[in-house]
Length: 303
Image (cartoon, rainbow, N blue to C red; front, side, top):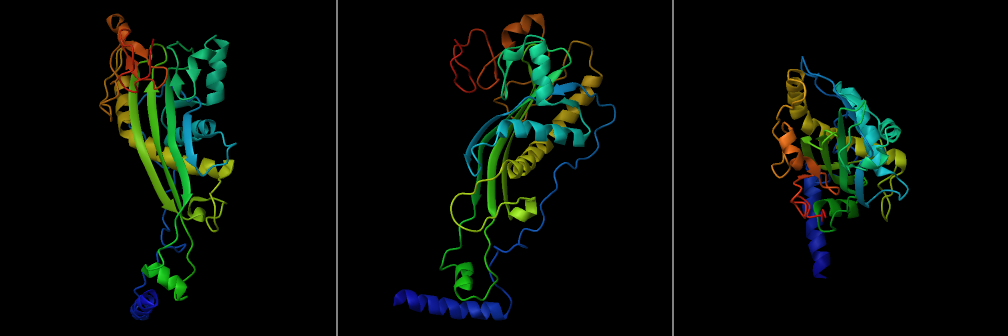
Protein backbone atom coordinates (compact mmCIF):
# COMPACT_ATOMS: atom_id res chain seq x y z
CA UNK A 1 0.00 0.00 0.00
CA UNK A 2 2.84 2.32 0.92
CA UNK A 3 4.52 1.55 -2.44
CA UNK A 4 1.34 2.40 -4.37
CA UNK A 5 0.95 5.64 -2.44
CA UNK A 6 4.56 6.56 -3.18
CA UNK A 7 4.12 5.84 -6.88
CA UNK A 8 0.90 7.88 -6.95
CA UNK A 9 2.60 10.89 -5.37
CA UNK A 10 5.59 10.50 -7.64
CA UNK A 11 3.31 10.29 -10.66
CA UNK A 12 1.46 13.47 -9.69
CA UNK A 13 4.74 15.34 -9.33
CA UNK A 14 5.94 13.93 -12.61
CA UNK A 15 2.84 15.00 -14.48
CA UNK A 16 3.53 18.53 -13.28
CA UNK A 17 7.03 18.26 -14.70
CA UNK A 18 5.73 16.92 -18.01
CA UNK A 19 3.23 19.78 -18.21
CA UNK A 20 6.06 22.31 -17.99
CA UNK A 21 8.34 20.29 -20.27
CA UNK A 22 10.98 19.21 -17.70
CA UNK A 23 11.11 15.41 -18.06
CA UNK A 24 14.14 13.47 -16.91
CA UNK A 25 14.37 10.74 -19.57
CA UNK A 26 17.71 10.57 -21.32
CA UNK A 27 17.48 7.16 -22.98
CA UNK A 28 16.18 8.35 -26.35
CA UNK A 29 17.99 8.11 -29.70
CA UNK A 30 18.67 11.86 -29.71
CA UNK A 31 20.27 12.25 -26.28
CA UNK A 32 23.82 11.58 -27.44
CA UNK A 33 23.59 12.71 -31.03
CA UNK A 34 27.21 13.79 -31.51
CA UNK A 35 29.95 11.20 -31.74
CA UNK A 36 33.33 12.36 -33.07
CA UNK A 37 34.30 10.81 -36.40
CA UNK A 38 37.61 8.93 -36.13
CA UNK A 39 40.38 9.44 -38.65
CA UNK A 40 40.34 13.25 -38.79
CA UNK A 41 43.56 14.77 -37.44
CA UNK A 42 45.50 18.01 -37.70
CA UNK A 43 48.21 17.99 -40.38
CA UNK A 44 51.66 16.71 -39.40
CA UNK A 45 54.32 19.26 -38.46
CA UNK A 46 56.65 20.62 -41.12
CA UNK A 47 59.98 18.86 -41.34
CA UNK A 48 58.79 15.61 -39.77
CA UNK A 49 60.37 12.40 -41.03
CA UNK A 50 58.34 9.32 -41.98
CA UNK A 51 60.14 6.15 -40.84
CA UNK A 52 58.82 2.75 -41.88
CA UNK A 53 56.78 1.42 -38.94
CA UNK A 54 55.49 -2.12 -38.84
CA UNK A 55 52.17 -2.78 -37.11
CA UNK A 56 51.89 -6.47 -36.15
CA UNK A 57 48.74 -8.02 -34.71
CA UNK A 58 47.95 -6.64 -31.27
CA UNK A 59 47.52 -8.49 -28.00
CA UNK A 60 43.91 -8.49 -26.80
CA UNK A 61 41.70 -9.50 -23.91
CA UNK A 62 37.89 -9.37 -24.12
CA UNK A 63 35.56 -9.35 -21.11
CA UNK A 64 32.20 -9.37 -22.85
CA UNK A 65 30.16 -8.28 -25.83
CA UNK A 66 31.90 -9.84 -28.86
CA UNK A 67 31.37 -13.06 -30.75
CA UNK A 68 34.02 -15.62 -29.82
CA UNK A 69 35.27 -15.89 -33.40
CA UNK A 70 36.23 -12.19 -33.69
CA UNK A 71 40.05 -11.85 -34.18
CA UNK A 72 40.41 -8.71 -32.07
CA UNK A 73 44.22 -8.47 -32.32
CA UNK A 74 44.26 -8.65 -36.10
CA UNK A 75 41.34 -6.26 -36.57
CA UNK A 76 42.95 -3.77 -34.18
CA UNK A 77 46.22 -3.77 -36.13
CA UNK A 78 44.38 -3.27 -39.42
CA UNK A 79 42.37 -0.37 -38.00
CA UNK A 80 45.50 1.24 -36.54
CA UNK A 81 47.23 1.13 -39.94
CA UNK A 82 44.18 2.77 -41.53
CA UNK A 83 44.21 5.53 -38.90
CA UNK A 84 47.95 6.13 -39.32
CA UNK A 85 47.45 6.53 -43.06
CA UNK A 86 44.61 8.99 -42.39
CA UNK A 87 46.85 10.96 -40.03
CA UNK A 88 49.47 11.36 -42.79
CA UNK A 89 52.21 10.33 -40.36
CA UNK A 90 54.86 7.64 -40.57
CA UNK A 91 54.99 5.00 -43.31
CA UNK A 92 52.94 2.16 -41.78
CA UNK A 93 53.45 -1.46 -42.82
CA UNK A 94 50.46 -3.77 -42.30
CA UNK A 95 50.64 -6.89 -40.14
CA UNK A 96 50.72 -9.39 -43.01
CA UNK A 97 53.67 -7.65 -44.65
CA UNK A 98 55.45 -7.37 -41.29
CA UNK A 99 55.22 -11.11 -40.71
CA UNK A 100 56.20 -11.86 -44.31
CA UNK A 101 59.34 -9.74 -43.94
CA UNK A 102 60.18 -11.35 -40.62
CA UNK A 103 59.81 -14.88 -42.01
CA UNK A 104 61.81 -14.09 -45.15
CA UNK A 105 64.67 -13.00 -42.90
CA UNK A 106 64.38 -15.99 -40.58
CA UNK A 107 63.01 -13.84 -37.75
CA UNK A 108 59.42 -15.04 -37.69
CA UNK A 109 59.73 -16.19 -34.08
CA UNK A 110 60.85 -12.75 -32.89
CA UNK A 111 57.28 -11.39 -32.94
CA UNK A 112 54.18 -12.35 -31.04
CA UNK A 113 50.87 -10.47 -30.85
CA UNK A 114 51.68 -7.11 -29.28
CA UNK A 115 55.19 -8.22 -28.26
CA UNK A 116 58.74 -8.20 -29.58
CA UNK A 117 59.85 -11.54 -28.12
CA UNK A 118 63.54 -10.90 -28.81
CA UNK A 119 65.40 -8.02 -30.50
CA UNK A 120 66.00 -8.61 -34.19
CA UNK A 121 66.99 -6.33 -37.05
CA UNK A 122 64.32 -6.40 -39.75
CA UNK A 123 65.28 -5.04 -43.14
CA UNK A 124 62.57 -2.69 -44.42
CA UNK A 125 61.21 -1.96 -40.94
CA UNK A 126 62.68 0.88 -38.88
CA UNK A 127 60.32 0.59 -35.90
CA UNK A 128 57.43 -1.50 -34.62
CA UNK A 129 54.22 -0.07 -33.18
CA UNK A 130 53.13 -2.73 -30.70
CA UNK A 131 49.69 -2.59 -29.15
CA UNK A 132 47.32 -4.21 -26.70
CA UNK A 133 43.56 -3.98 -26.24
CA UNK A 134 42.88 -4.61 -22.56
CA UNK A 135 39.58 -5.74 -21.03
CA UNK A 136 37.33 -4.83 -23.94
CA UNK A 137 33.72 -4.74 -22.79
CA UNK A 138 30.56 -3.96 -24.75
CA UNK A 139 27.38 -4.10 -22.69
CA UNK A 140 23.82 -2.86 -22.70
CA UNK A 141 22.82 0.11 -20.55
CA UNK A 142 20.66 -1.12 -17.64
CA UNK A 143 17.02 0.07 -17.62
CA UNK A 144 16.04 2.98 -15.37
CA UNK A 145 15.01 2.25 -11.79
CA UNK A 146 11.21 2.03 -11.44
CA UNK A 147 11.19 4.76 -8.79
CA UNK A 148 13.36 7.10 -10.85
CA UNK A 149 11.84 9.86 -12.96
CA UNK A 150 12.63 7.97 -16.16
CA UNK A 151 11.19 4.75 -14.76
CA UNK A 152 7.90 6.33 -13.74
CA UNK A 153 7.66 8.12 -17.08
CA UNK A 154 7.77 4.75 -18.77
CA UNK A 155 5.20 3.24 -16.41
CA UNK A 156 2.79 6.13 -17.05
CA UNK A 157 3.47 6.19 -20.81
CA UNK A 158 4.15 9.92 -20.71
CA UNK A 159 7.54 9.75 -22.47
CA UNK A 160 8.93 8.18 -25.65
CA UNK A 161 9.85 4.52 -25.43
CA UNK A 162 13.16 4.07 -23.65
CA UNK A 163 16.01 2.61 -25.72
CA UNK A 164 19.24 1.48 -24.04
CA UNK A 165 22.64 2.69 -25.12
CA UNK A 166 25.75 0.57 -25.43
CA UNK A 167 28.63 1.06 -22.99
CA UNK A 168 32.05 0.40 -24.54
CA UNK A 169 35.10 0.22 -22.26
CA UNK A 170 38.72 -0.82 -22.71
CA UNK A 171 42.30 0.42 -22.40
CA UNK A 172 44.56 0.78 -25.43
CA UNK A 173 48.30 0.46 -24.77
CA UNK A 174 50.73 1.42 -27.55
CA UNK A 175 54.54 1.15 -27.67
CA UNK A 176 56.82 2.35 -30.43
CA UNK A 177 59.86 0.06 -30.33
CA UNK A 178 63.12 -0.20 -32.26
CA UNK A 179 63.30 -3.89 -33.25
CA UNK A 180 67.08 -4.11 -33.54
CA UNK A 181 67.65 -3.71 -29.80
CA UNK A 182 64.19 -3.49 -28.22
CA UNK A 183 64.58 0.16 -27.19
CA UNK A 184 61.19 1.70 -26.31
CA UNK A 185 60.78 5.04 -28.08
CA UNK A 186 57.24 6.09 -27.08
CA UNK A 187 54.46 4.65 -24.96
CA UNK A 188 50.86 5.51 -24.21
CA UNK A 189 48.00 3.96 -22.25
CA UNK A 190 44.59 5.37 -23.06
CA UNK A 191 41.45 4.38 -21.12
CA UNK A 192 38.42 4.48 -23.40
CA UNK A 193 34.75 4.80 -22.47
CA UNK A 194 31.89 5.52 -24.83
CA UNK A 195 28.13 5.50 -24.22
CA UNK A 196 26.18 5.67 -27.46
CA UNK A 197 23.20 4.29 -29.31
CA UNK A 198 24.27 1.66 -31.86
CA UNK A 199 23.25 3.70 -34.90
CA UNK A 200 25.32 6.67 -33.70
CA UNK A 201 28.50 4.68 -34.15
CA UNK A 202 27.36 2.79 -37.24
CA UNK A 203 26.58 -0.56 -35.61
CA UNK A 204 24.03 -2.97 -37.01
CA UNK A 205 23.39 -4.70 -33.67
CA UNK A 206 20.34 -3.66 -31.63
CA UNK A 207 20.70 -2.74 -27.97
CA UNK A 208 17.04 -3.57 -27.30
CA UNK A 209 16.02 -6.87 -25.78
CA UNK A 210 17.63 -9.01 -23.10
CA UNK A 211 20.76 -11.09 -22.75
CA UNK A 212 24.36 -10.32 -23.65
CA UNK A 213 25.36 -8.19 -26.59
CA UNK A 214 27.41 -10.11 -29.19
CA UNK A 215 29.04 -7.88 -31.79
CA UNK A 216 29.86 -9.31 -35.20
CA UNK A 217 33.32 -8.91 -36.73
CA UNK A 218 32.14 -5.88 -38.73
CA UNK A 219 30.63 -4.14 -35.70
CA UNK A 220 33.67 -5.04 -33.58
CA UNK A 221 35.92 -3.30 -36.11
CA UNK A 222 33.90 -0.08 -35.79
CA UNK A 223 34.11 -0.14 -31.98
CA UNK A 224 37.87 -0.83 -32.05
CA UNK A 225 38.38 1.97 -34.55
CA UNK A 226 36.87 4.44 -32.07
CA UNK A 227 39.09 3.24 -29.23
CA UNK A 228 42.25 3.21 -31.35
CA UNK A 229 41.46 6.68 -32.67
CA UNK A 230 41.40 7.97 -29.09
CA UNK A 231 44.73 6.25 -28.36
CA UNK A 232 46.39 7.65 -31.46
CA UNK A 233 45.21 11.17 -30.61
CA UNK A 234 46.73 10.71 -27.16
CA UNK A 235 50.09 9.78 -28.69
CA UNK A 236 50.16 12.30 -31.58
CA UNK A 237 51.77 15.29 -29.76
CA UNK A 238 54.77 13.20 -28.64
CA UNK A 239 54.89 11.32 -31.94
CA UNK A 240 55.10 14.63 -33.81
CA UNK A 241 57.80 15.88 -31.44
CA UNK A 242 59.81 12.71 -32.01
CA UNK A 243 59.50 12.64 -35.83
CA UNK A 244 60.64 16.27 -36.07
CA UNK A 245 63.59 15.64 -33.73
CA UNK A 246 64.46 12.43 -35.58
CA UNK A 247 64.74 14.32 -38.86
CA UNK A 248 67.56 16.41 -37.37
CA UNK A 249 69.22 13.67 -35.32
CA UNK A 250 72.70 12.36 -36.22
CA UNK A 251 72.67 8.87 -37.71
CA UNK A 252 72.66 6.07 -35.13
CA UNK A 253 71.18 8.14 -32.29
CA UNK A 254 67.67 8.68 -31.02
CA UNK A 255 65.96 11.83 -29.69
CA UNK A 256 64.63 11.57 -26.15
CA UNK A 257 60.88 12.15 -25.87
CA UNK A 258 59.16 12.29 -22.48
CA UNK A 259 57.02 9.25 -21.76
CA UNK A 260 53.41 9.72 -20.77
CA UNK A 261 53.86 6.98 -18.16
CA UNK A 262 56.89 7.27 -15.85
CA UNK A 263 56.76 3.55 -14.94
CA UNK A 264 57.68 2.68 -18.51
CA UNK A 265 61.32 2.78 -19.54
CA UNK A 266 61.99 6.03 -21.43
CA UNK A 267 63.38 6.15 -24.93
CA UNK A 268 66.99 7.19 -25.21
CA UNK A 269 70.23 6.80 -27.08
CA UNK A 270 71.42 3.19 -27.09
CA UNK A 271 75.19 2.77 -27.26
CA UNK A 272 77.41 -0.28 -26.94
CA UNK A 273 77.78 0.31 -23.19
CA UNK A 274 73.99 0.20 -22.79
CA UNK A 275 73.30 -3.09 -24.52
CA UNK A 276 72.62 -4.78 -21.18
CA UNK A 277 69.66 -2.43 -20.76
CA UNK A 278 68.03 -3.25 -24.10
CA UNK A 279 66.80 -6.72 -23.17
CA UNK A 280 63.03 -6.79 -23.00
CA UNK A 281 60.45 -8.72 -21.05
CA UNK A 282 58.70 -11.24 -23.38
CA UNK A 283 55.40 -10.66 -21.56
CA UNK A 284 55.04 -6.86 -21.52
CA UNK A 285 57.92 -5.54 -23.65
CA UNK A 286 59.44 -3.56 -20.77
CA UNK A 287 63.19 -2.94 -21.02
CA UNK A 288 65.07 -4.93 -18.38
CA UNK A 289 68.63 -5.54 -17.23
CA UNK A 290 70.45 -8.82 -17.82
CA UNK A 291 70.71 -9.11 -14.02
CA UNK A 292 66.93 -8.96 -13.46
CA UNK A 293 65.30 -12.25 -12.51
CA UNK A 294 61.80 -10.76 -12.68
CA UNK A 295 60.38 -7.96 -14.85
CA UNK A 296 60.14 -4.76 -12.74
CA UNK A 297 57.06 -3.71 -14.74
CA UNK A 298 54.80 -6.81 -14.84
CA UNK A 299 56.59 -9.22 -12.48
CA UNK A 300 57.05 -11.97 -15.09
CA UNK A 301 59.90 -14.40 -14.44
CA UNK A 302 62.75 -13.73 -16.87
CA UNK A 303 65.06 -16.70 -16.19
